[in-house]
Image (cartoon, rainbow, N blue to C red; front, side):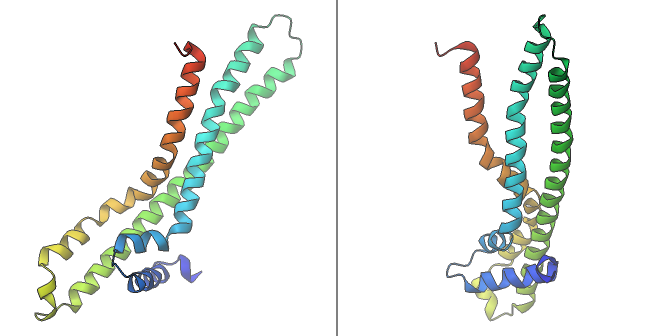
Length: 177
């Protein structure tokens, strides 16, 4: 698909950037890659939810093993198999999310680099009075930071969820006082 290719995304970012009232290349890139950012947040959100089930499953395995009168061994085996399946699923999810984040970041970096080079090529002595040479160069020099932005954004969203979950689990174990 053309919209998944770098050239297609470059055209999309340029269109979004041209339509902006307040020119912001970063916002244009985020809008152009919003579907990939949403996929990343979904992947990290699923990772977060699966991790939250681990303590409950392990606590149930421990409870099952300590119960001397429990005769249904299939239940214990099912819990262990569930833990293994969740680990495999998380590994696959992490690989896909990592690949999505890396390709999104690299594409965003290349697009901003291409746009700044185009801008530099269009500058003449008459038009460069609005820009210092260092302004455009600093934008192009900072594009490497976008490679990890997709990963950082998705984890930024799950941080309050983790803080709330960990606080609740902590207070369940040690009490509110």
